[in-house]
Image (cartoon, rainbow, N blue to C red; front, side, top):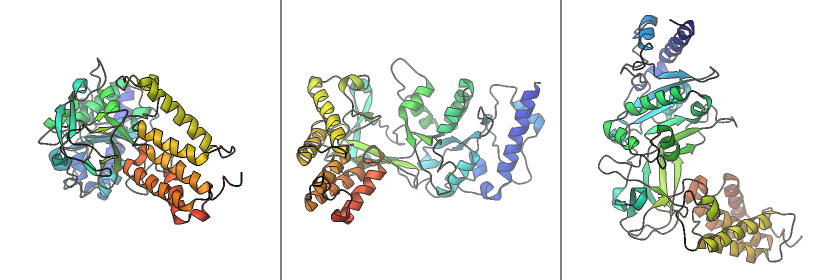
Length: 422
């Protein structure tokens, strides 16, 4: 036996005892599940047990850790500052299941804030769309009828909810792979199969690549006391979706010109997908996987070729130049309102509906800067609406607050007639 392993095992037992001795954790329900039942271990036993029953001693745990097939469901970060465990609830979201890899402290907050949502998140509104073949992308979902802009298309809880700090602070690929594999193993069979079918990139079946390809960064937290909420170095969580329901499997594909955008909702532990523009019957529903305001050369690895690539590049380049000119308050463009309206037009021509709230906001400021209150308010309303639909991929929080301030009083806003005085 290696002495280093003994120290690790003692640390694991200490953490388990502390975690399980807290009554608020032992009896905290998560959709009817006790927290002690949600902490998984690879051999099927839990890390938490009823009061007075530790469940295993040092000798037992040593035996478990001698075999690669019987390892604990917890690992330390490389710095030894954080202890990350697998938490599993196979009954979550009507039996689709969820597993989390995070700290006990973060798990506690999630359990508390989501105690009653396990069977309340209804993953899909199937009547709005159907699954079709989607060329080289495999599956895709297409609308069954006209979907107006702003409509909720679907909402879905993740099947894997991973602490991004764990992934960044654990250099051992073996540790990462082991815990990820265990997290997937604890999911129901249909969900496990969906994970294995996720696309991870060309010529790769890497679990890590599948997680990065299908995962979405989630910031903030479910409570004001969320660990790391005010830490600028905190990397947040990663929500991995399979886009499935128990009756039908769906896949929402990426597009460089998407017609839908996701928003994360901590209250129900789910992403909501909204239409950012009107979607025609039979049209594929798509969403952005990354920043798509790029030239064709920059986005060619992710977007299919277009016969109008040169024209698209010209529009993107002009968008960049217009934004730089209008957002630089030290210079005075000759026709700022006309430039702002051209900017909006270029966004629309490029199909950048997920990001157009920014263009609307610039137009609102320019009309207000020229002293036209009601034109400014019109653009500000459009900016707020588009930003609320698109969520974090649309209008930044500061811009949203700026537009709301303009609507509260255009003549009191910092931009009122500021172009006139330049």
